[in-house]
Every structure is written in C-alpha cells, then in structure tokens.
Length: 212
Image 1 (cartoon, rainbow, N blue to C red):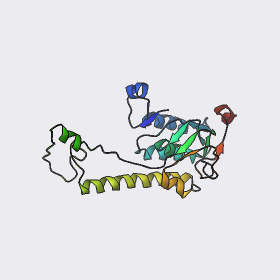
Image 2 (image 1 turned 135 degrees about the vertical axis):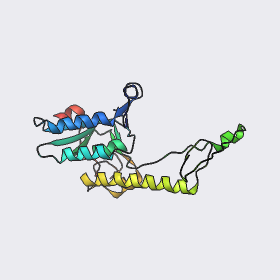
Image 3 (image 1 turned 30 degrees about the vertical axis):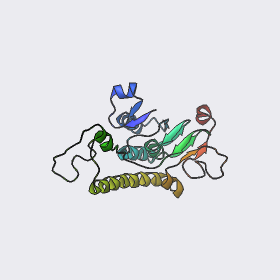
Image 4 (image 1 turned 120 degrees about the vertical axis):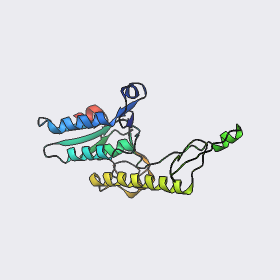
C-alpha cells in the first residue's frame, strides 16, 4: 500500500503513506526459506515510487522461479510504475475489472526557480568544481551536459524496467512499454485492456473471488 520507497522510515510508513522496499524484501526472503509455504501473494495497491528497485524485482522473479513456489500479484486498485515492475515479476497477475495497471516508464523532475528568484531580486551564484556538481540547485539552469546526463540516467533506468517486465511477460505489447499508459481490467475500448496488452493474466470480480 502507498508509495514505494527505499529505506522508508517508520514515520514515513505510518504518516506519509509509504512502504519500505526493505520490508518487502524481508518478507520475500522468509517465504523463500520456509519450505512449508508454496504460494505467495503480492497484494498491491500502489502508484509506484522509487524507480531504483531492480534488486527487489529480481528477488520476486527469483522466488517465482523457485521450484515448489508460486507467486501471484493481485490488485483491486492501482498497480503502477515501480509497483507494476514488482507485480510483473509474479508467475501470474490478476486484477479486478475497475483496477488499473501499467505506467511503465521513468522520469526525473526538475523545478527551475530562476525566474521566481529574479522577480524577488535574488540570484544564485555557484562556485564549483565538476561538470555535474550542483546540478538542480535552486536558482540555477541545467546545462546541456547536465541534461544529457539526466536523460541518459532516465533511459538506462527505463531499459532496466523494460527488461524486467519482458523477462516474465514476453507477451506484453510494445504500446504498453512505450506509452506508459494505464490499462483497466475491462474497457469498452476494444483492445485497451490489461489482459489484451499482456500486462495481466486474469480478471476477478473481487479479492474473495481471487482467493477462491
């Protein structure tokens, strides 16, 4: 539940609606080591969060590929972005008709405050060493070298995201990978559903029906 974060504090989990990746990793490790457990369910309702969860996605994939273990991912709400990266590594992904999955993509946001600062009569002066040092500092513009670096970083993270999804879901449509769109469990628009685009394997009306 909530926004996925690396090393989220107890305060962030209780008061800011976050979920720590480390908490998930610990649970997955317990499931793998316990031979009496044959089925694991990732019950997900999350818009995503930190894109740097490659190790956690790999841990889910490893559990899904472990002999005698089956991993299901389920959502009756939203499973997007980093949360979908995690859920896509399950053996089977099931959702309710009104749920949405997808948003396969990455971004870095930069708030340029130079104009606002100029209007208040202030100006940022930076003395630095290193082409990329002080990148994104309030009141500064991004240089072309910095833009190129950030774009390369986004593309690298996005390729890792794509590789993880395709490793367990080779049937996924190119549109789902390229557009970062969200797909519902059912839709009046022909072909615009999660199952039609390979993002999900099945539709159930509720959690109870899924468990049954």
